[in-house]
Length: 467
Image 1 (tube, helix red, strand yellow):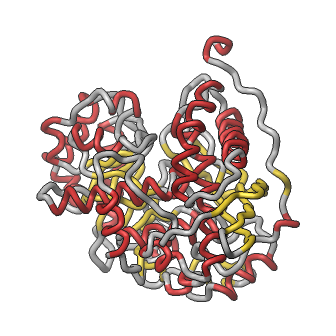
Image 2 (cartoon, one colour):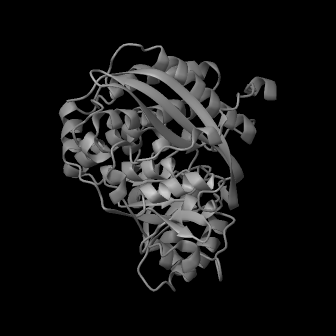
């Protein structure tokens, strides 16, 4: 039976994270960005007060890629999304289930952000992070872990935001979930990453023994085909089998350009090491173009949406356009991932192959990676993109005492490498056993005294003023 709760306080913090190497996806290069932390206090009916936490990078130019905005302005949008959501959540002072609170706030959040020219994907960031922290607190109050709690639907997830489903669809899906003991990493190959030789895609010291690879594209069919040929030649030397996914991050302008890439994958013998191992292609076109462009014959390949996933109806809309899958990212909302996984299971059972994929917007070691990993292990994501294991040096700028606390609490997930604590990758997999602690996949919280309050967002610039 779901618990009812009331939110008593929400606080935001951040600390800088410097990347070990540039991460280029689409037209964006990230060398450093703040990591944001949420701390909430809730009061659970009949159980008293408890505290929960979550974390996520404030990633520039992904949630909103409009060219007139600077990277700093898009980070400011995310800070505003958090602050707007805080005000909306705290305005609900009565007891509600965790999901009922989310459902009551998400519409108002999107509307309030729209008035400040913040698009829906960025608007959802604030509730997504607050919801994770609330769930952490709720699970702690109940003395149960994420997997058991979600199987019992502790948050009261129902179909009020997904009218194509029934309440029983969601309850039955959750009740049938069993934690995946291992989740394979999908190693990201960014646009600026080395391909050949030491540090290249086939270097085990670089890819940590990964059997899955996520290859970034830049939107030029000829350039991408040449680069994929080089990557394929390297991956063919691996001592084990492998699979790949491709991610264009909205860089293909239209169906014509995308068709040029698919034609090469279908016909070019030099691309066979990639084409034969290809699982799916992620978000090839801009989100607005995506909604207007049925894939048609291109749907002979599997495609998923990611940046176009900005509402609860995005997956049904994408499916009607020929897309087979959608990404799960905890920064887009844990409840939306559960709803979409329920859809994929229901549609697949009815005879139409659909799936949910695990994609990582650079989850940092600690809270962020643990909660995102647990979400995927719950909904059946067998392999997930993991960026933090190589774009950030271990726990990065996290104080050593805090990193050691996570290592002690989750020794199957981290390992000591010299003076650094890093993700422990076991034959290409992450283990989930220690994520079964009471709370949302963590038995420890970060050192709140070792970070700064969330920076105040700068004023946004409207398109009219920009031009």
